[in-house]
Image 1 (cartoon, one colour):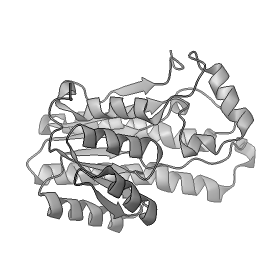
Image 2: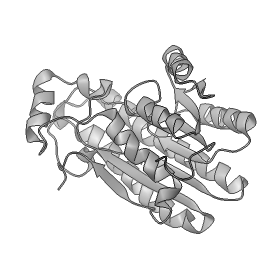
Image 3: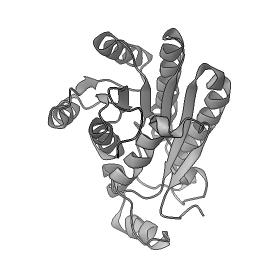
Image 4: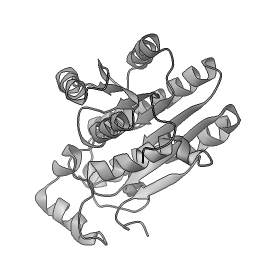
Length: 248
């Protein structure tokens, strides 16, 4: 049975050319939503939207650019009249590096995409929702690394912890405006980001996981769709672990 309230809902998904973002776009389209796929990779996101069908549109944009974010939100609003949901998902990783050896250029890039990018899209969705008279659902993508230490991922984990703080604060601040803000907290998931890690890192993550495996993007997308839908109207400010029990 489809989730309640997603039929014809207009949703933006960032980082939608692959991985969790693409899986979410696919799931929302299956639920009947009108999906705008956003990604910095113009060719891949165009292809993804074309394969998705269901009236999906592709928009190239840098989530860390204030101008780009305003532009693609404006394009979606102009096309569909109203934006009701956002999966604020775009993010980057990188090779595990001990904290003492982390280059500031790498740290700054992580903060720019994972932290600034999420904040800009969250802010724009709230602004648009308020202009539309309130009401919106937002899901931010965090990470289990925000809760437990992983050698080599200090910079990455710090940006993901910030996302949880954005989520809680926005949820409380705008609850009375009908704006719900939640987060998904994936464990190891078979995405290009995770699969770029060294093989020993991937296998170690699977061994540590209680289910002994990596999750699939579709398993994360299912929770995102639930949180964006009207099945979750009394849930806001929450962080949903989708990690095979890793954070238990």
